[in-house]
Image (cartoon, rainbow, N blue to C red; front, side):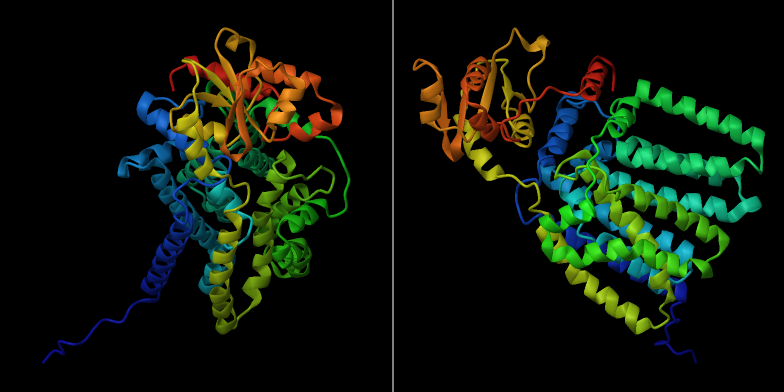
Length: 495
């Protein structure tokens, strides 16, 4: 008689799928709980994404033209709730969980070791660098996800050799397109990786490689012309014209100054290429080729030749150092054959990830609670352009209080009312340098409102030292870049 209590044993593959699924759900919940620790968005760009989605949902277009699939993903997720800020947070939590899966897949392709691959996936998303993207730069976060998937496909295509099929190339190009449209920084890196791969194909099929390279080059030019906010020659010039300022270990040092509690992680990243070189001789040729490219990327991202100040373009590039840094540590991780060591590492990474998120969410964060108190107090004429610092401008746009940005107005705005929301200027300072009849609205939180022409008159009267103190990021005084103005041209085009 058959035993009714008999249960078929789970296969190894089924166990692995359950473990991956369990960790995916756990990471999603952990990310979402930290995201929901505030009812507001995080970072200076948090309400940029909310305002973009709000604009697309209400007007059928983004207020700032963009081609990123991440923004369209946020729009799609907005259908699952009435609060765009919350649906954005759900989407971000899913992105981080999916980065864990993509990292695990890449590690498994490189090592063929399941436990080490899982450790790598968790290690990748536990970096203190990742929360800067999940709380501030969501498009970059999507670019990271697609870039890791692109790396996996690139390695697979290189490894298969003559066994490659047409769909492998199709998947590679598809993932490259996703990286390219997601964000400019990861797009530029992916372009370099793809061209290096094409150069390696020349000995195999010189004619086909040449045509493919020319086709790719022309395609990139076409994409930059016809799609908004994609990689453009002006972006490359921005990197080439970046001012040089040699500082030994400058990017690691600057980050350690921001977060001294993560200094051990900085040391680990700094040593990762050295550890890789120690392990390089035991790797297969195709693995060496793959890791060598990541080694070059690591060196480029950490070059101590730029001014790595917070929010600067080189610093934002440096924040990606955890990707090549983590991958270069993978050969060392794969060397461990003791399951208990990897399991212990996995268990230690969970609280570290939580702490990194809790600390990271405060970076570049703003007082959105204060902003919500100030909104009802504003008294702007109709069709007013509001100039205010980054973060506050997107919050105003999201709440449909008016048209706001953090730059000096262009000539096209000369016939509309222009007002300035100022931070950190006292009534005594206004009285000293402006006529008494000047209308100024004083608000809580050391904010004030006046017409832009009066603000510029005020600045022209200030002594140099006082002007230097006042003109910080909270009182912007620069024009939009050529790249931004170029992007404005797409507003008249259908999205």
